[in-house]
Length: 127
Image (cartoon, rainbow, N blue to C red; front, side):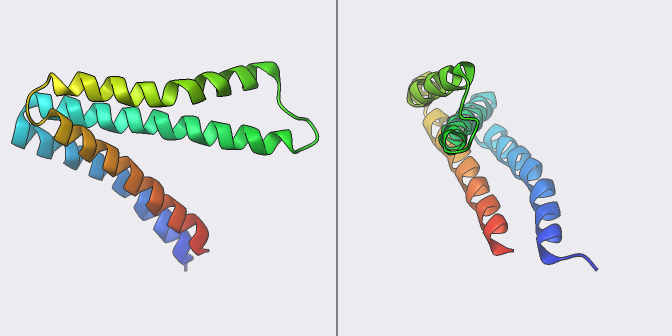
């Protein structure tokens, strides 16, 4: 018998691609290819934004350990930290040219990524 955390992780890993595809299909049905592009930009932009945050947190934690951080790690972290917000802004500006539903689907893609991150955090803390 498997533990609940193993089952929860298996469901999580199976559900994330399904949810992403469902969002893209709904965007195509409601707003055409422009909605799908806006949703994809929202998902990718937010994913990069959150990955940059994770790198900064991980690097900050590694400086407290014995080895510290190397110069390339620090450089990548600084670039990621500086590029996160402009990346989201550029995505927002770009999807506004995709029609009236562009910003809506961009924000739905952004919300999906944040919901997935919260879901994963709950699974990690639960067990």
